[in-house]
Length: 197
Image (cartoon, rainbow, N blue to C red; front, side, top):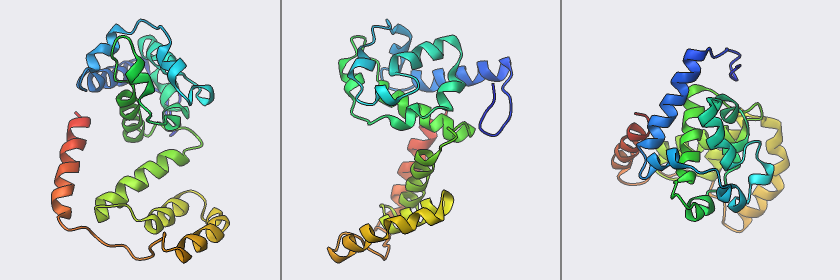
């Protein structure tokens, strides 16, 4: 199995990745219920994005059981999740599937196992950096970093839209740090530490 960095995962690494993910999921509230999945397909039928995903929510559980998590991480699947919680609310077993999707994103980012078209992953990490730096989002800082990391020339296609937003006072050029930024960083570090066990 190739990762996005061109390495191959051997059987031992594949097993370790599966176990890491399973441990992290089981640490979530109600995460243990992932082991009780009955493969009914309610999650997939409830998902507004399932038709565009390489792996439907039900197929992700099947891939986890089959030890084929690398393919899921290297697909666009987790980045297409709309975070609508439809899968979680309708699951007859009570599996917190939306939280599982977030765990898959985190695992993919920390392991460098991202889809080839990785724009969504770059946007997610850039957003997190911006919030960690300022305590809030700043659209100009976010977009500047995002386009520098992906395709700087694509930013020119957004200039007209940006100008209209600025005219209406909806796009702030300057960035301001919030009060109590250190406290926010401590909270984020605590949450990240819990997610990264």
